[in-house]
Image 1: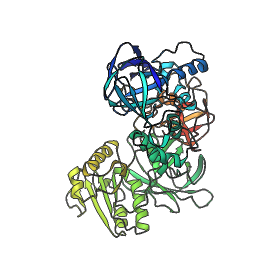
Image 2: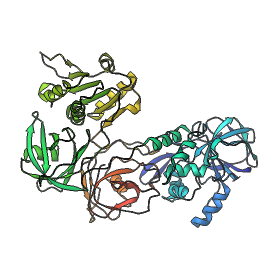
Image 3: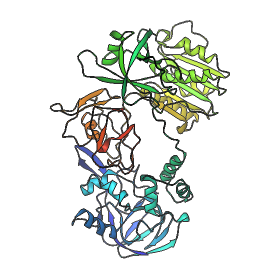
Image 4: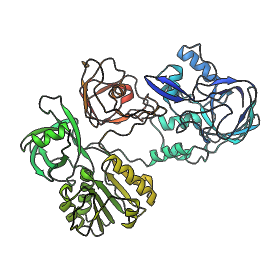
Length: 569
């Protein structure tokens, strides 16, 4: 079947890249003589990011000498030596379009099984000095593949590679790679892939999600922003006011899903336009959109809303959006919130009450005290309309004379168990990040499956930057240097609006210059980790994506603004 031409190893090291320190083991060098291959890797080898590389399923990476010849010609390079692509085995033969997932081979004393294609990763771009290299590996159908070690043993350059058995379904490495990363995937082929036991659990999960993924809920309203009139303002507590918004022409508003939010654009005083997102607290189908805004001590927009906004004023509003929505089903529902985080789950509760939903519902809310407890009476009345409701409220600074459903103290894992929260429930959480982290841990400890725990967070999402050494979080800020001259770019979650600086490579690099938490993996758009909701505006792609995002999404790693842009980031 082939020959092992080179065994390449390298230990993880910290590499400076784009002003960051990246822990990576992609720098591999050929070694002579026999090397012991063990269950997790080759003697003398290591990986910097075990979340995407290495481990039992990805112990050995294989790349072909024929692909080296191809890239030398295609890229016009004469410096590609064995190990440059981060592989452990450089082989003669075993092309990606012939080797199949589940194939078994003997090399020297060791035996192996093919488990998955190479993961798209920005580090191969680092190694080759080509930011688009991960995308090229996919689009040219030359990813390489990983092996699991079935039998440990010594290997060395020159060893013959012997095929021991073919995997079921005869699904090649190249076809499997395209199935995940390229458009036009076939559902029947996805099902075939799931019939291959050797396929790594991560890829199996990705294929299941592709099969089960419903059509994305696109905004049902209007593109970008439209003016809406403030019909009324209701003070809920000393720090929370509800703003009821209607169309300026009297037309009916498109229905929102329970749990979605609105992005509102205002111009506080002489400041630049500012965009903030607020959950809808009104039930689906209401005549007006109701958002409820807490006045934050140093909140520019929340302070302006409380001090300046009046009934009759007009503000710019984007369509309801967001994936934190109440799902249909028969499992029990747990609605958990703290403080102003009550708003999206209140909309969910209203939807359940409107249909007298038969599912058991647990309503669990934490507030400082009665004076800070927004919507206490409204929630209590809605729960009274349900056939099987359980109300539990916690006050962290409680006074005397609490109602029967109110308890003093904070929520704990034991408290959740004492409330009788079912282990098969769907849970919806909204509140401060610390509250949601603690409650997520409590719920999983209690027995809820992680995929049944849904969370809404209005600040910037936690970063996903594999391999980048963690540094202390910095508050988001405009980029350093003279202001840009291009279109305004707004990062709504982070509260940053700044003109586009022409020297930036992409919306991703601008976000990083503002210290806005970002999410990416390959940095070329292949894996879609960097997909971000596009609230308004337009972009051009520096490199055309292999698979285009939805119309109201953008791949920030390879795009630039063409008009004023608002991103949900």
